[in-house]
Length: 239
Image (cartoon, rainbow, N blue to C red):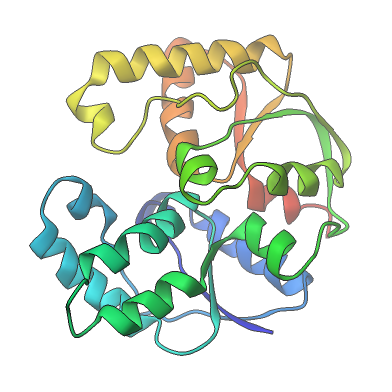
């Protein structure tokens, strides 16, 4: 199967290894990965900030960049969820409504694509240590992802997965929310971190690097040693 890879802005600029590991995982699962180097943003930041006109311009380019019939896979439930749940509304009664709907129906977050589309749950990964998993809001509520990453992680040799308290509660990032309501955001992050550290885990794993970036920044500020790891990095390990 051939798939198109969408790399979110912050992964491209700050965590490129997540993208490379996503390619490794998809190829391990038997996929041929295509990457359109002309791709940019999915349009979510502008859309969430209320700039729908500007967002539509960015989203139009996204639709054009991902033309075709191949599945689109992204190491971000946030971006996948945005495209899936908002493109139809954004392009309603627009010339791009039909192609936008097709793109929205073809995009998947990595773990849900592996489990739901490819029926792959075992990748032969090896990763030593204890870990706890954070459910991102986008993964849980926009992509309906809950069991998929856990199924994949439970099959990783050497990894012990421990559930934290209130794993489905927001970490406090929320994009511009962390800027506009920084005090609330920090308090939410501290609560999430406390729950994660209480599990005695070595690693905090999620589908979304945005959540992990937020939590990692707060932990470094506090001098805490829990390491953040994207799901793709764990699944790509050991081969």
